[in-house]
Length: 108
Image (cartoon, rainbow, N blue to C red; front, side, top):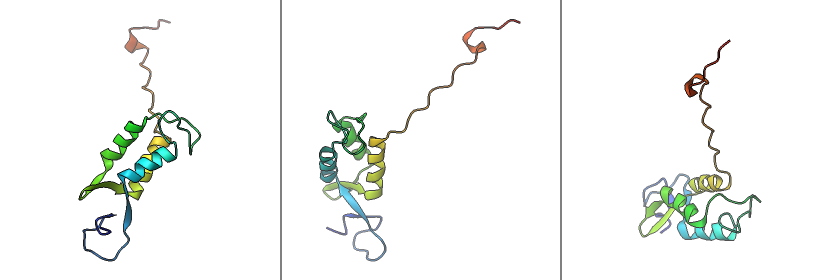
């Protein structure tokens, strides 16, 4: 089972650094226990999350891998997902259209 739960190496290989895999149930407990998402969010960061619980789980599932009957992801990927939940990347505002593009003209 341990060979199945290490990312980056095929089962049965030995040696090298293995990155631990965080399973989906552990991620669920982390979200709920840390109050990272949902109505009572604001646990670690002190700010309310923009995501609901099921949206956070969708983010996890979109990056998860199968390990037999188990679903998980490498720890470094989990850290990136959690960072995206706590501090989402702001979307840059669209540039303002040029004055002439709006049909306005300036006469001097």
